[in-house]
Length: 324
Ligand SMILES: [Zn+2]
Image 1 (cartoon, rainbow, N blue to C red):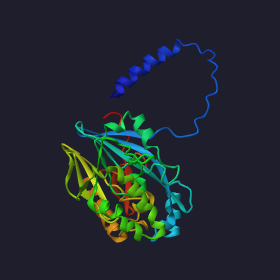
Image 2: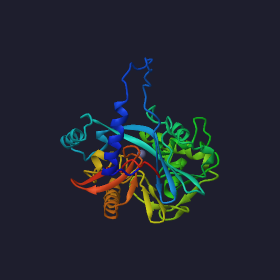
Image 3: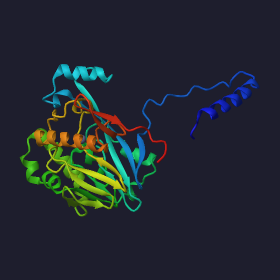
Image 4: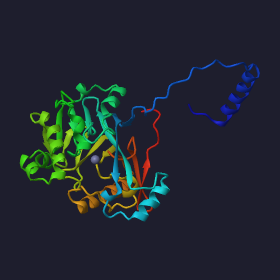
């Protein structure tokens, strides 16, 4: 409702009269409520024109500060203090997925890490259930790239497709790179688990995979956008309906606290840190100039907001939307 001053005054008179008639008595005796000891499922919904987008939280990942080779320790400490997070060598990042319902098609963009990177992830299925979304109703699984915290959840622990009726959509350069047995065989030991995770996730979708480029329609309402640097085929997805647009930018940002202030600080496992930094600067610039709504897999849940300038750049979380 819209409340204006005159209504407020009238309501105040009515409330005072009502209160005057109340006799304060002894309240009921309440039983102790057992503590839950954990967070509620993370789900949040917005509309982009006629399209509904539901952010689903899969969990979080702790990134060592040393994963950002250009980060200066004193500047990191300063940012941690300014952001009211513990000063130390760990940066906590959200792991988000986004379900896009166009009305005709149901898509999910990334699916979290299942249990591939430990117990801090894997909440996506519970989030979908809480949002009333049936995995069997998903038509399209879209992967921004094939890292384990993005594609782990597309497959179940027993190796089946978690979205049994969906095709997998992924950039052809990512699919070809990660699914290659030769690349797995030739990878250094520490890097092999990335290939193994991608191949385990991709295998149930081999027959249905649709390999895409960086600028094409995925389904009506969703287009791919090349955002290179993080992996061979890292891709963003633009959701649009009428004049409304949302850019789901994948892994442009891993540590919002560090990388909005310092867009040049790339994460160590970018395929090309310099290309990734250039992509990040351009994405920030475009988002700021166009006042574009963006969503990111590692932005603080629900991971939806805007970019503004100031001390480098700043992320402005979108206000809670009370209705669609
Ligand atoms: Zn990631």
